[in-house]
Amino acid sequence: MYKIFKIIVIASFFLSFIFAPSSADAQGYKGGYSQEKKQGKSKDMAAKPIPKIFSSKVTSTYQVEKLDKLYDNLLASLWVYASTDFVYQKKLSAHIKPERFKTTRYSKEFTGDMKAAMDNLNQNYAKMASNIENAQKKYIEIKQGIEISDHEILEKLWNEKISEFQEKSNRYFKMQGKFLNTYKELVGFILNQGGSYYYKSAEREVYFYKFGGYKLYGQYVDKLNMTSFEQKKLLKTMQPANIR
Image 1 (cartoon, rainbow, N blue to C red):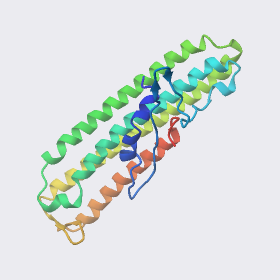
Image 2: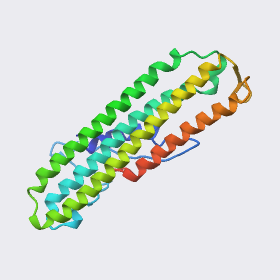
Image 3: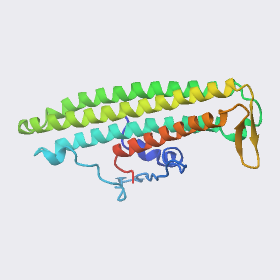
């Protein structure tokens, strides 16, 4: 399972890819390293405390705080996986920039990154499913050390939060699949044009000779941008600690 420090390590990574300024969305991500001294690790005073989603509802506060961390780690792992998806989104988007249409486009220009992006999605989905399964096992272990009087409340809350997370994470991955399928359709459209387009340097735009080509191209690009925007919007509802 990914630990929360990994979300801090890639803070600058998210600045570039998840909440990078764009026509659709502009957000910010900040994080930092905990400095390690000879006496031990110093506390990061700027770090946000992990939300007490579970420990605030029961009497076994100390033990249940482990579940707060466990759940926050799940959120962090999704953000780590999402960062790689956005790296590929950026790579794929670079292939359809208007200036790339100065010459005729060929399938080999797209296939490498398209395959890598799909492989990455499948791997991330499998890893996330494994993380959730491991979290469930860890929950059972932690529950054994909790007061029996807290079990009923905890069981209901845990199941609700895990079900919610699973539904949202699945929805996120479906969005990434939608992005990649839309991109595949766009590439197919470009290749079918057979070079019937040109780049207008004065306007820095690509235009199509065939009727309706420019409009259809724009619709594909808008759909890609909107899907990416919706992914970022969904991720914001599942923010781990130390994202501000």
